[in-house]
Length: 259
Image (cartoon, rainbow, N blue to C red; front, side, top):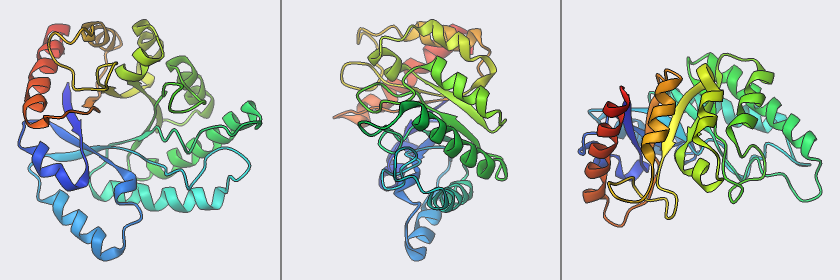
């Protein structure tokens, strides 16, 4: 299993030196850059010794995917540029989390919003497929969005869309925040294409003795023959110390689970 780190564009060199297998960047950090700044971003990524293989932060709140202000032309134009640029940087998977962009406005019909999200995700899958990129729909806890909070909901949506380029992400942190059983990973099966991890209480780096039971998560991923990546998406006041410790710890857990 490849283990990576979610990083900001400005500090990718910092995390590169820690031994991670890849990095994960936010799409919104570069999708709307002017051409001169975009070229600098490309040069920076190309100078790395490791790849930037995964991307999150796909859709900004200014491009709503649900609600009364949905503009499919705007969505397609933004996604086309964002996916193309992600591909240029080496993307293999793009996470469709984007809680604000998919938040159902008060009073808006929830089923209509779900249908709108299905259409938007299908557009993303169509565009990504042409670049050999997978879109991974991420269930988020209810504090971050009110649409698609649990893995079974994400799996149902992916099956309805029916595009090979659309899949599901399992995030240990969001599962714990939502009190979702780790056994729900088993419901994903081959639909699972990406994974995130952080500890529950403070979204910190996973570390030995922090009170979490990450082993169950790894076991369930192994049970579905998971072939994808695992990104640390977390915070730390001392990343230079916690980064390598977390990487070594997760690597040990992965080995113990049989990866």
